[in-house]
Length: 348
Image (cartoon, rainbow, N blue to C red):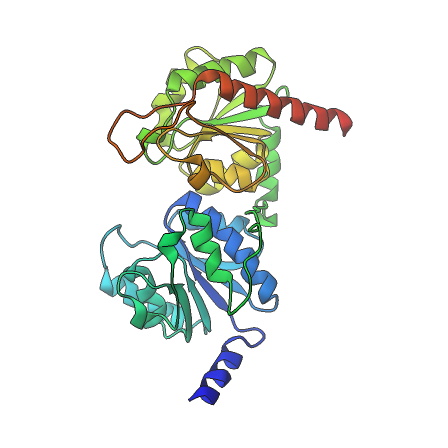
């Protein structure tokens, strides 16, 4: 039996055998997966990597240079959708994947690679899914940060974890380079361009809009161009900010266009949200505003992020009102980011 196991392992990890990553449905957490993808690519440089994730969030995979192909799924949150999962598994079966990293910890997420008969299935042993995994990992709940839960899946055997996980690093692909350059030049007045994302997937994570309006006025008064980025659903936030500050509308329902807008800007300010992770992964100096969530757990690991947090500790497990950082610490962080960008521009 032991000898058979060794032969299977050698076959699975042979040169050229494609790898599948089952990613998260949310934008921010899918961007976090790029840390794991970089680890996999470093370990197996000759094996192509594909990713499965929820539409339209999966579009961000086009900006991950190590990903060969992105496969979208339309599963509804909280629903098993057995026939849809079986259909996806049949599609994947024809792609000859030999290894799957199941990043979400749900039973449903592990079902597809099992049905697809992928020999090596790596994931956390949660929700009674041990029979669905060939290489279960234990101890997930001892990790508070999502990035740790993601990246530990990339540690094999007795290998020690690195002191620092690789930061997500997005790049504009050649297929979108022309569109990116057009966005970068269009309506670009004085640099730097500050992209403000006043919304998020959860309105409870949104810093008060009047604070974003104050930030926009300050940037405009200093000669910067202000872009409001996010989804079309955030038009009311755009209108509220635009009443008192000259801002440019960069709202869109295209995730690809959102990513290009963020990549074309110089600085980012926003809530704990997917766009914050995108901006950080593009290497933009970021000011992340945290109130409902804990920055120590939820902020991107990229070194370009400066988190603004409440001035005193709060009990986030309670249903009390959300406490927010005041305007001043956000302005201080933003001013430092603008100074840094301007100095680099002058030096260049």
